[in-house]
Amino acid sequence: MSSGRASGPARSAASEQHHPPADRRGPGPARPARPPMRTPGRPRDTRRDEAIISATLHTLADYGFAGLSMEAVAARAGVGKATVYRRWPTKDALVVEALGTLADLSGGAQTGSLRDDLVAWLNTVRKHSIQTLAGRIMPRLLAEKEEHPNLFEAYRRRVMAPARDRVAALLRGGIVSGELSPDIDIEMIIDMLIGSVAYWQYTGHSRDVTGSRITGVVDTVLRGILQRSGSDTAGMPAAG
Image 1 (cartoon, rainbow, N blue to C red):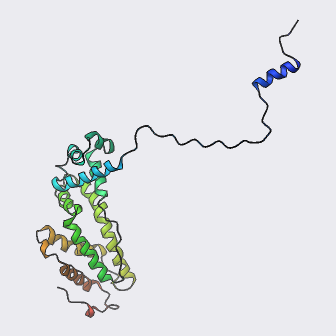
Image 2 (image 1 turned 90 degrees about the horizontal axis):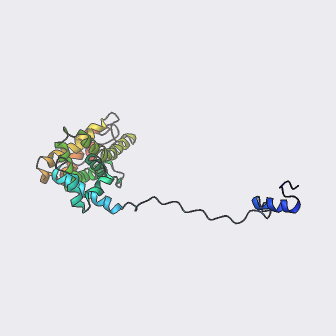
Image 3 (image 1 turned 180 degrees about the vertical axis):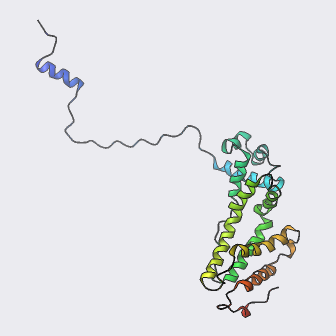
């Protein structure tokens, strides 16, 4: 009786059908890598992002945070309200990110003269305080600081702090070079320089903030902080 199992050549052929012999000719050509899988949906349109951010800043400058709505931003940007909400789920998140785009991160050319660099920096502050979106937005946020302190803090951290950091670096450089007295209060000096310009501009006397007035402010402050043993103040122009 037959046992039902294949024998001899028949058995070998049957085995090879299920277990083909290994290819002994060596590895074949490498298969091309599969392209990365695309996520579903269309890529995010960065032009819409820019339009929404711009609309947010202009609306904030015109009406303040209390007068800003997602609907108004969407209409100004020319997009649907849902488009705004998909990117920023809350008004706070949208405004905070928009404020981050206001920072002027340019370092500015340093001339090697501390006085000239400070004059150039303070003139930049003068021009940006009124004539830019950042300058128009600041008093709006300041007026709403009590109700929305986190927004003014975002403005301070993202817009004001970088500018202060640049002038602080100039003053520290003056200390290292021996031009400035080592015991100066850098933060106070920055407040004195900025404060005079801000006072004139935000109290309605912006016409008085001229280039010569800026130079006078810098010279007056420098006279008080120059290192007496290493710097000759007699050669400085008279403040005025």
